[in-house]
Image 1 (cartoon, rainbow, N blue to C red):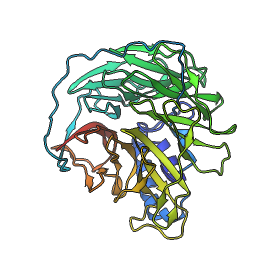
Image 2: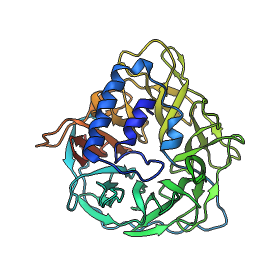
Image 3: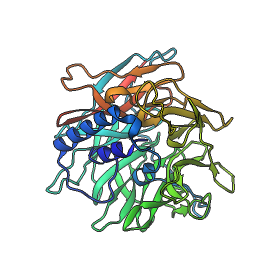
Image 4: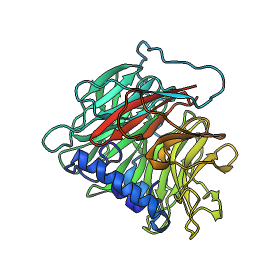
Length: 415
């Protein structure tokens, strides 16, 4: 979802993508450098390389089928905390609230459930090597701290019952997949090295395993029927294909970002539909000027695949960013370019996208409008950040705002 230069910058942003190993990070310098690189990228957008192949190295995930083990029950919901429940059509009028964080307030939201009641995130790294991340789970305005073994810990998704999934790095170069249920951290049945990326309300988990531990960017998608089941490899579109599953819909459809193993081949969206024997490689969508050269899927919800597409051309879009927000209706196969500019982020069950728009401002693109999200009252920093969680009704979003050396978790509620 980013150019090569943007990818390098985002490797420096400690709350975003997982690196290939536990680096030492200068937080304030990293944020300043990432911001500088993103601004340079916008100036020279037409000459930058495409974002396609990068996703396989950045976002892990996978699908599979394990009929041998009966699914374990998902986490039982704890008493819910009321959130604003606006009525009427979505107007795009939003308010921002800083989420509570025990101690050091620097943290960010990294995922959420389809209703927006549960949000997951992580705080700023602690310790001498600055690779130990405390994990956070919010239910409404209540926050719970979670300690996960290893380093570079991250929770990536949570379902409506509060069952969260994620991964961490071990003492060597191996990764480990985890689930968190009612505050208990549970190691998912063994993958030699890999991680979990998404979970649906049935408790089915998707993720990936690293084919070569020394090269964690070479991955194979896998699926757990439950947090007690052994992982199963998903069938591949072809013998050399590799990549990661990034999402699972409530009907069991799985979405992955993959390539055919050749470094010059573009990233493609691959789906496994319930009952289908083989995966389906989605066609590249059409964008202004012709067919896209690459498509970076971001999420799958309600039958909508959302992502960003690029086309190699000398003509730069009016926005100056050679990227188009796209949604694909899996029921009809129709792809649609939404009006607006958006980078990274996630989608929801209506096929809307949220992430950051121009000037790194958190924003939303629906089928009718583009909205720049506000900052909380009293916020004195820049209006920069990102959305990483987007409820299906569009009413609750989670993400972060950043300025200089501060990074704060934010919840937006909209009507």
